[in-house]
Length: 246
Image (cartoon, rainbow, N blue to C red; front, top):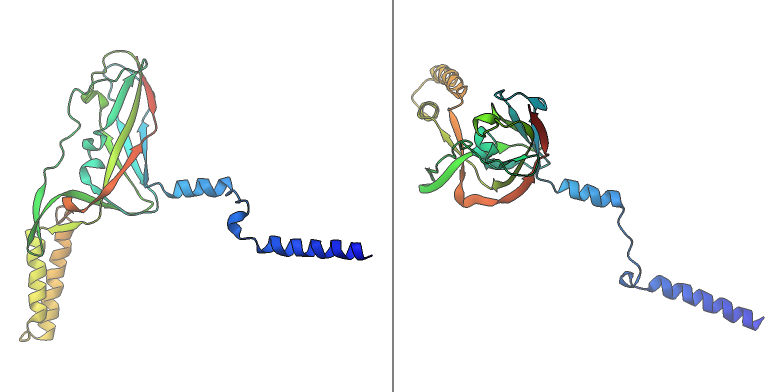
């Protein structure tokens, strides 16, 4: 009977000791695979999707190509040239069926030159930029791939875009002279103590109508990215699309 009691006491003490062992000495639990995959997906900045209208073309037929940038859960400030117009395809790779890269015959657009803006009295070197919202997308189109490459040889070809997308931290707005003038006039009228309230209200309403008209113009406001506000870059690889020229 005494032996049994000792055995019971030793078992109870052992359980208590194990319960007090620090967690660092215990085996680590592996994270579920689904959790790891979700974390990897969430870390994506954006994805590139390359599309052709069809897979077979005759020699001399136009080959339109569309490149779509799809954002994940973050807003991005990026250079306009990298997401709009032919220059968005600057890192396009065209290969033959044997893996030989086809040389570019004509430049895929021209990158915008830096422009000097003034912020708080200081000059700032900038480039045209675009503000993209989370979970949105933006597309660029090449009207005809054969305008830039010699595609007179029948065969199978493949296309892919691999680019380092630069991301910036700041964006500046440059307003047209007309917009600035109207805004300054509205501010001046609001501050005028000698103008009757009714007359002030009518004048401001008229000016705001003119302002709305000017703001409908795409050139009313232009966005620029200060070159010294570069945050970093994200390497993006599109899908590979194949087509045949017959």
